[in-house]
Length: 420
Image 1: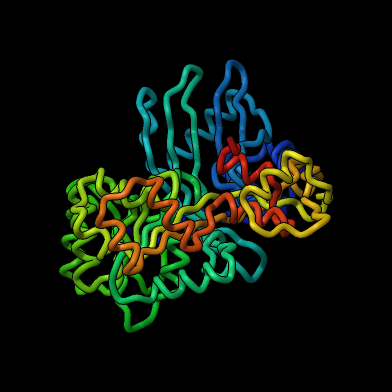
Image 2: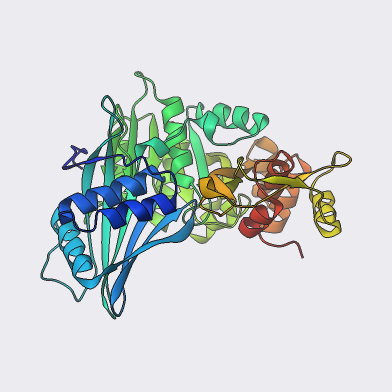
């Protein structure tokens, strides 16, 4: 896949909140569509948006952006301007202008000037979808400033040390699990950044490549080159570490297991509800049960929760129900605890939250757990075994972050589910 070269040049707009973003767009509505799109993209990047939506309506189109996992309205524009923006985006993305009755995907890249000295390359993935009032547009903004080091993931000290230990092993599998949008790719890239050394050969198989990493051989799934066939080809390239974007089928799971058992460290992702569900998921995909225990080193379950806004949040006493939930999940709770309360201000777009952080659980497969896996236990039994051996769940990790003033109890429950 070609590297980002900066096909379009844009500038940071210095936008701090959605109100300022809306005002900037309103002042620029009479600009050339090329300049207006640059202003919109620059402002969306300033606000650390993951996605930009342009949705046609009966008379006007709505522009929305996703910040910290939540969609927020920005402004409505007239139909003519919507059509001009659609045409410009299609042109940049190499999407066919004359096709309006079926979905299309494309991409382009921008070189964004932060100031007179700093520029960053940002890749934009474009998707169009025929809708009742016209084509809906979604732009995924892949901002390299979102690539973080493993130390910045939000891991507890003991988890950070465990993760560092496991990703430095010469062989085995480290699997990150969670739903779409839970930060799995960010975690995998943080792992790669940590283990990357001149003497280590790292090859990735991704669908698609989201961020470009210097010194790493990144490949992308295409027609005739899927995860399973790609993995077989990659193993002939003398790699030390292989990143497989996702395990989806029997061929991929068994090839990945074989790679992990033959001297390679394999990093990958699965869609499961929690870390303990990794084992049964591998089996359900057709993985050979006898290979799973010996091959898997670590399964990581994760979600993303919003950080409390430090400018407007207040501390309060927990309710009786909240205190009951905390006591159920955590063994030690300080007396007279206070928990953060989301409020809302201009700095956080009146949401009460600004930024996100991961909550994690780690299912470690050591010799004892490997023997237990060989008995074909249920997910519940695996989970209980891991908890008895010291595993803290994502919910527990989240509540601990709540007690530390990083997030709220409500936010943790939104991502992990209510206690029954």
